[in-house]
Length: 613
Ligand code: AGP
Image (cartoon, rainbow, N blue to C red; front, side, top):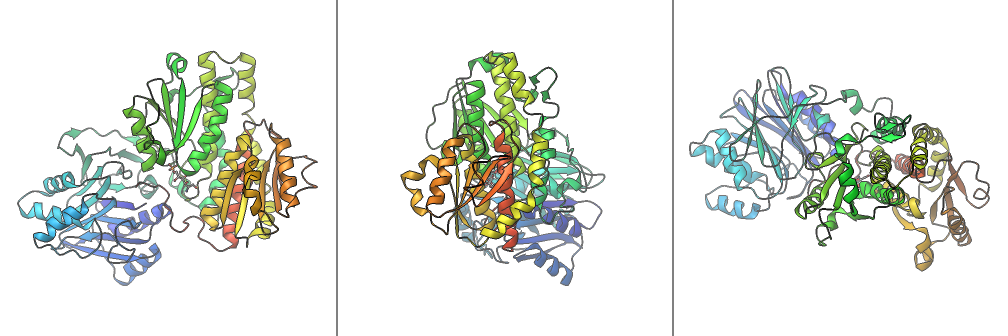
C-alpha cells in the first residue's frame, strides 16, 4: 500500500526522498510524488506511473530544500493519475501532506469544507487533511495544534505526514488506527519518517514506531511524541540489526530470487538461539509461554492472510500432531465476521510478515475483545502485530522486499514446529526421546533447502515448458495441501496465470473434469503418509492427458515413469518436508514470470502490505 517518507535536516531532502521512495516501491503503487520547502515555499513534483517518471520530472524541473515529504500511492479514492498523486497542497499552497489509509468520513468533511468555499482539486480523501489544517492555522492555531485538531476529525485508519511553509522547522507524522506503520528514524542533527524501515535504513538504524492515535513532532534535532489528546510519550528506541545491504538486490536480478536463495540462511537464523540441540530443548522467550498457560490452552486459532495463512495451515498439522491441541486456521478477513468461539483458554495466533496487514490486526483485536491470549509470528520488528500481542516469535528473515512472499513462508513453518514442541514439552505430553528426535530433525533443514536450490536449472526447464499455459492445477494431500495452495498463489500473483491449489482427494468430486492435455498438474508427492494416495492421483491425471510435474523425494522410483517432469527434494521427515517442497514451486513461479517478461517484484494490482480492509 502507499509508501511514505519524510526528511528534516541540513541536507537537501530531494535525493533522500527519491531514494526512500525507490526502496518503498515493493509496497506497490501507481503514482509517486515529493514536496520540499524551497526558499520558504512548497514545491511539489508528482506523476502517475513508475518512480522513474518522477525521477525524470525532478531532473527536468529540479527542486531542493528541507524539510520534505514523499509518497508512493496505491489508489483507493480517485483514479491513479497525476492530479490524485500525493503530496496534496492546501488552497494557499502553504500546507502539504501525504497520506496512507482511507478517511471514512471523507464525504462529510468534503461537503463541510466545500460549503466554506474550499475548491477541491483532486478526487482524493487526502485533500481534506490539508484544507482542515489550513483552516485551523488560519484561525490562529500553531501547526501542531492545527494538525492535532485535523487528525481528531478524521475517521478510519490513516497515516499522515505533513508540513507547512508557515512553520518550516517541523514535520508532523501521525498514526490514526491501523493503516500501516510509521517509523521515525533518528539521525545526527537530522530526522526521518517512513512507512517502513528499508526507506531510511541507509541513514539510520535507530528508530521508534508510532502507536495508533499517536503523533510525532519531528525537528532536525529532536522528536516529540504525544497522543492525539496532547499527552507526552517517551519513545521506545529500537536498534535495527539489518544493514542497508540486506535490503539490496545484490547479485540477483530480482528481490524475489534473492529472497528465495536466502532461505538456507534465514532458516538457520530461525533456529539459532532457539533450538538447543544438545539438551533437546526449545527456547521461545518472547512468547511469554508459561507452563501454567501451556496447560490451560484448549484451542488455538491461527489467523492470517494469503501466504501467511498457508503457513498457518501447515502449522495446524504440526501443532495438532506434536502438541495434540486442536487448531483452527481462519483467513483473517473472515475471522471477525463469524463470531468465533473464543475464551481465555483460547490462543489467537496471528502470522504476518509485515505485522501491519489490516485484516490480520482486526482479527487479533477480535481475539483481544473476546479475552483470548494473543500471539503473533511476525517479521517486521516493532510492527503492530508484534506490539499488541501478549507474546511473539520474531521471524529471523530480514527485510522481505518482493511482493511475493517466500522466505516469510518457510520461517513461520519452523517457528510453529518449535512452538508445537515447546507446548508439548510444557504440557508433559511428549516423551524425551520423541522430543529429542523432533529437535534433531531440524538440524539439517537449512542445508537441505540449499540442496533444492542447487536444482534451479531443472526448474527453469519446466518453467520454459509451461510458460504459455493459461491454467495450472496444484494438488497436494495432508500437510502438502497448503503447499499446493501456496504454489498456485505464487504462480497467480507474479505470472498472472490462473492456477488452482486443490486437495488432491477432492479432484474426483468435480475438478478432475478440467484435466486435459492443456492442463499442467503440479503434484506434491514426497514420501510421506499420503504418498500412496498421491501416486494414484498422478495416475489419474496422466490418464486424462494432463502434463504432470511431480515434486518427489530424491531416489523415488515410482514417480519418474509416470510424471512428465520430476522436481526432486532430499528426503526429510514428513513434518518438515513442506519447507523443502515449496522451494521448487517458488522458483517455478519466479522463472515463468521472468520468461514472460513480467515485473516480478511488483506485480500488477498488488501491494506488499495490505493496510486497508
Ligand atoms: C504473498 O505472496 C502475498 N503477496 C500475500 O498473500 C501476503 O502473504 C499477505 O498479504 C499477508 O501479508 P503479511 O504476511 O504481511 O500479513
